[in-house]
Amino acid sequence: MQRDHAGAAAGSVLTCRNFVAGTWQDTAGPGIERTNPATGEVVAIAPRSAADEVDAAVRAAAGAFRQWRRTVPADRAGHLHRLAAACADRVDDLATAITREQGKPLDEARGEVRKFVAALHYYAEEATRVYGRTIPNDAPGFTSIVEKEPLGVVAGIVPWNYPIELIGWKLAGAVAAGCTIVLKPSEYTPGCAQVLSECLAATLPPGVANIVYGDGSTGQALVAHPLVAKVGFTGSQATGQALYRAVTGVTGLSLELGGSCPMIVTGSADVTAAVRGATRRAFRNAGQICIAINRIYVHETVYDAFVDGLGAAADALTVSDGLANPAADVGSMTMDETYRRTLDHIADADKRGARIVAGGGPVEGPGLFLRPTVIADAPDDALIMTEETFGPAVGVARYTRLADAIDRANGVPGGLAAYAYTNDTRETFTLAGELDFGNVAVNNVDAGIINAPYGGRRESGFGSEHGPEGLESYLQLKHVRLRHDAQ
Ligand code: NAD
Image (cartoon, rainbow, N blue to C red; front, side, top):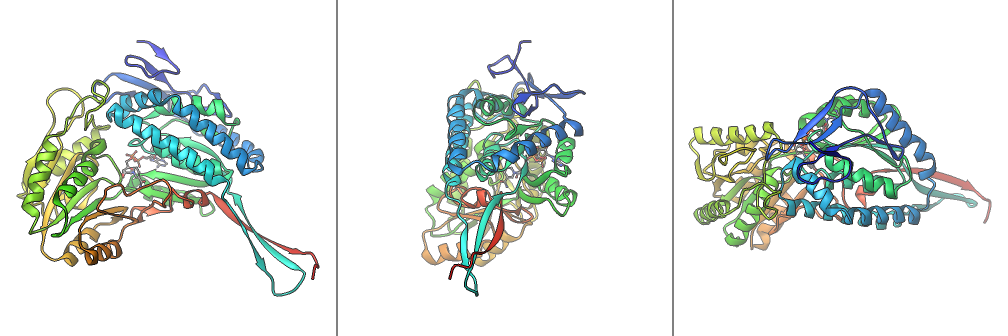
């Protein structure tokens, strides 16, 4: 088998090495072997970094912070724009690495990389728009200045479903703010981070952005490190809760966790548009999206039309190896655990008397391929209506009163994103006001855009990424009270 450091071409194995202080490090101990979930072939090998290897990366970031925090915003902006350009030059390398280890179709992976590049440019520009303020004092001869200063070393821990884009939100926000960062990619998607490290090496000063590979044990060592000023975590609710208990009281923390996202389709909605939206947001990336639509409540007057439309749309999606068929709608799922969980949720709904109107099981042959599945008449206590599935399956249920639909939509622990389709102004404002989620999208299903704050509520975590807030979260305030005696 051929091994290389740079390309991600079919048949090659990406060798990942920790990226610390601008160079690639040799690590001791057994590593991680990542296989392509569509084919089973080994596509990347990576270290399972131990505490001393994590320590080296954090120390490199702490050393670089002393200088990086002093750079002027325009300088940091220049570095981020150059990083964006370097990544734009390697869209295909990054996207191929993503598809080979994560499973999403290549065209979709290219889209992810382009959004990552856009986030880098966005935060490059935001870096130059951070302002403090002056405050009048109640005695003459004094002035108070409020400054915003970078926090220090950030630990950025990310999952595998958008392995490059999610790195981007933390990397760009932190580096734009003047922080330095140690990134810990998911053990399921190390290869694309290795490609990224080559872009980092070419564009950022040594130590500003570092990467350590490993699983949860590596993540634990990183969040417990005393020189880490803030942990920015994206991942599951279970890990987020463990992390909440693990970080010490003096380490900042933001948690972007999962949830079970609802959609409400009212009697006034454009049903065709609602079907189109539900199809996109329930099945894109094989449903492995934190803001995927998991459960849909549809007014009784449009219920049958909606269920028929969604079933037909799901059946029309192409499910295929995303490397062989870059334009496929749905690729392989990424991990065994979520593949099985999705099958469990389908079986549970079936057992409870729901109707499977599209899909319902695996695609014949190798790989973690599931047919996009629509479950009609799903009872409120079915797993598909109460838990995050994280697979290509969605439950649909009927409602009569809007207030009841909103209660059911709000009735799960997580509060990340909710969707609604309606053509009635009162319904629109009622839904926007009453849905208890950090993001509410009405008559569209793109709940996150780069220049508006994005974050969850309740069990879906706290803190915001995107927008100016995604940069502010890496800053701390300083009050400087000056006595100058000018009258
Ligand atoms: P996960 O929680 O298993 O892992 C996420 C990351 O945490 C990985 O890098 C993992 O190695 C690391 N980790 C695991 N245990 C750790 C520990 N004890 N201490 C420190 N780090 C640890 O999640 P996953 O399966 O990779 O990702 C899927 C989940 O992520 C879903 O629940 C999804 O909803 C959520 N997600 C949320 C958002 C959001 O923006 N809110 C975005 C994408 C995914």
